Length: 76
Image: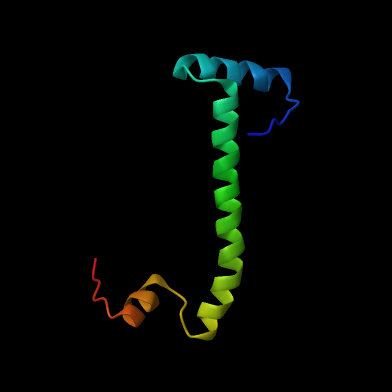
């Protein structure tokens, strides 16, 4: 594992320290989890930017369109 150093505002550090103590985990653990979540969302959005135009070119615009293509009868 490599080391990453972050500079944060004092108020941010206070909040992070409080949360760290409440959860009995390190500030590094909290930061690592936050970065991991951010990266997952960013990667999902990248994939979505590619997939949406391809789906729309096939006439798929809604969840119902997807279900129909998959042959799933879905009625709420």
